Image (tube, rainbow, N blue to C red):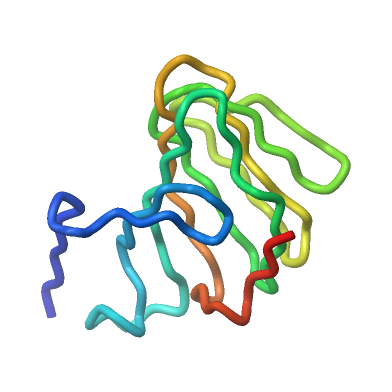
Length: 120
């Protein structure tokens, strides 16, 4: 069965970790048989997400901007085209170090639930 969704039709909201999110895919809200969820995230210049942990893994795909991702005791700079994998239960956050919005996709497996995330 064909499934299509337009992000322009999705309302943005501020998530618990302070990122601006738009849900892309979630098996509880969309008619898709998947075990992951995906959201588009934006962090404005000079801002950062709040440190948090997920019980599942998370993969980030960076679409634009310039930032730094912190995972436990490590960090790395990121830009458009970069992919970063975050293992389950790792303490993580993302900081925008550029002058434009840092935009990325967040893919969470298994799919995100309020119970699967702890925001510090």
